[in-house]
Image (cartoon, rainbow over all chains, first blue to last red; front, top):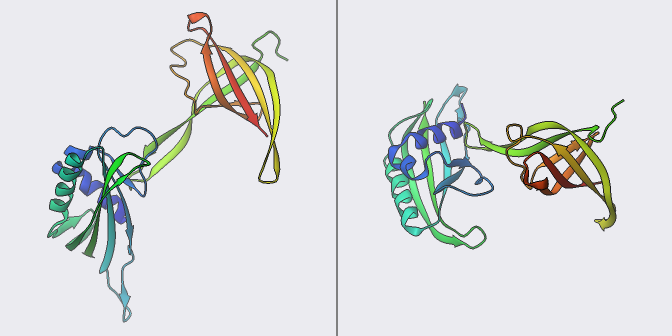
Length: 130
Length: 109
């Protein structure tokens, strides 16, 4: 199972995040056209289990980059706090996998003049095992 | 052989997007319906683009519809006509009756 599916389903099921984004969590890019509210686009790398000494290790570090988008800084801040609260000290199942820890890094804010949206980036290193 | 004014069969398609389980956005062309229409060519022009000559052929398409068949025709819709894809430039409801619509569309060859 793709870790992207687990991320979408788990974050979408979080009440604090879905209260702000509803189902607007997308892989790689935002959809074209009118957004009905704040949204998240994300990318992942490192979704490959390590293999060592002939034994299959399922440990992997997934680098997750979350781009948070909103029309206002106020709702962007609410979304950011919800996302941080969700991932901070995460220790539990993530779909079919298990995340034993998430290391968060706040990259900062910006304003995107092309889209007229406020933008915040959070990077997370997910320590995953089965 | 088909006779009469509305003797061409055209299919209208419009892009829609949906979110897949992994959050990716999938764009697909959805059919809005197939209609009998009157098609006439309207204008011809050419332009060079990246060392290629592109022909633009304007078409005027009139077709009958009712509001249960077709609720809206967006600017990003396309019309399939005899293997050609025409890009919709404008759409006008004739006589304010919601029965006949006239579309100006362009083939880019």
